Length: 70
Image (cartoon, rainbow, N blue to C red; front, side):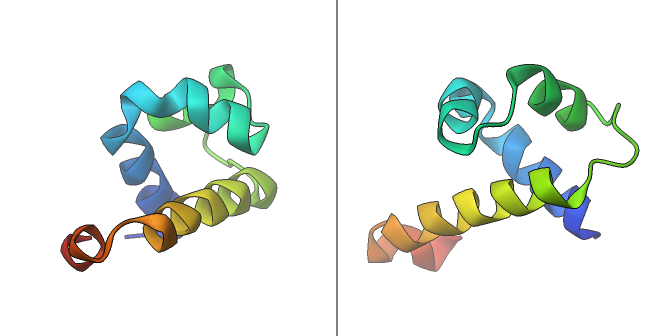
């Protein structure tokens, strides 16, 4: 699985949270929607890095029992 595929999978698992993800990362809802649908062939490092950092922060703030299941 590539880095982009991993980020796409995490986005799809949190589909209901996309507006919050947009607000916290500064990435547009349009971009997240198109990327999650696989319609952006070359997503660019900036967006993927921002999402990676965001998802990492979620894992760090999760209770211990949740982070063990991640």
